[in-house]
Length: 82
Image 1: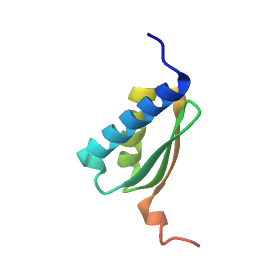
Image 2: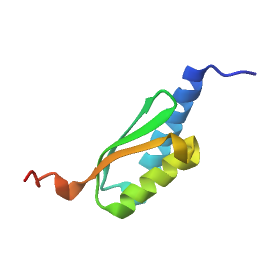
Image 3: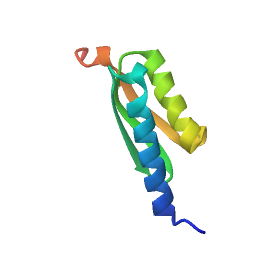
């Protein structure tokens, strides 16, 4: 049985989205998971460094650490535009 690259990317995306959504420690975060080629992109806002580490660890366990790109920001940056 062989898998097409698009199928693998879709499966990885669905797996990472489900795992991040199911993590109770990340309930206060607003994380968007998407794919760019074989890379998982994590974007949005997290409550703090611990949430960032948790989200990237979840994604890395599924896609591999070399395939995870963290573009998340801390939630306290929302109002800090100076």
